[in-house]
Length: 122
Image (tube, rainbow, N blue to C red; front, top):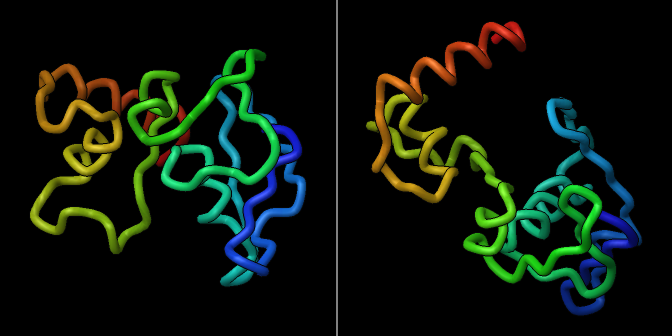
């Protein structure tokens, strides 16, 4: 993303944010409550629309107006703990962020998640 601005009325939540994430990289967003971490992710996932700036996927500018657009671009998000479904497994909660709901091959998806978990030491 480049030059992303998000305002809520007079409150400037994101001030010309530039952020690059390459395939396979893992990043952490750190900051105090109210610093804009969740707002940034909500813009990237299409829950909020930026007032200014652009989002790029694979170097090309894209329009992410809602989560459906984000998912179509390969952008998914697992929400913070309070948005998880309590009686679902960790795997099921992760897969909810893909936009496919619970329509998946549980064995194949579990293998993918286990491989990624091992790769990243989780």
